[in-house]
Length: 259
Image (cartoon, rainbow, N blue to C red; front, top):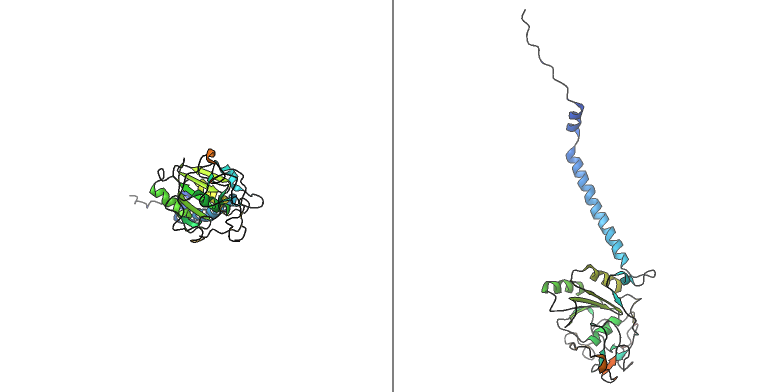
C-alpha cells in the first residue's frame, strides 16, 4: 500500500523569537530619548545655578573673584579727588583704583567708541561699576561685538578702547583687575558676576552710574583719554600720586546715596 505524504508539522517558535517579536523596541528607544532629554533640561539649569552661585557675593563669600585665576587685587582709599584739568600718576594700566576726578563717567551699560579719560572711569569703579577695556589693535570687530553684548543694557557696566593696553582685554572694578587674551574667556563672566555692584568691595555703595550732564560728564562728548604721567611728574599741583587727591570735596558727588 502506498503511503500518502503526511503533512509536516510546524515547529513552534522559540521563546527567544517570541520575546524578540513582543518587545516594543521603538517604544523603549523613545522612552530612553525622553529620559535623556529630561536629564538635560532639568540637570543643566541646576548645574548652571550652582556655577552662578559660586560667583555670587554673600556674607560667607564676600569676594568670589579671589578664586578667579589671574585676578590682581590692591587696596585703595576712596574719596580722593582731582579736578578736571589735573591727572593722576597711576601705577597700573588701566588703573583700577586710587585718586580720580570728582565726576564719574556714565556707566549704565555705556559703550564708548573712543578712549575716555581714566580719572573719570576710576570714579565709576568707586561706585561699583565694572569697566571693560580693550586694545583696538589686538581685538577683532567680532570680539568687540561680543564684549558689547555683555555691556549694553547692563547697569554698572562700561566699556571703552584703551590705547597701548598690554593684553587684548582688561577688566577693572575697584581694587580688582583681570587681563585676558580673548573676548570669549569664561573668566569675564565670572568677574562680572563677582564684582559688579558688589557691596563688599567698593567704597560708595548705592552711588549712581547715570550721566551727570553738561555741568559734569557728558556721555556723548566725554573727556578724551590721556596717558598717565610717570611718577617723577608728580608735583601735587597738576599731577597727583595714585593714593592722594588734591581737592577733597571740591567736586562733591551731588549728595547721591552712598557718597
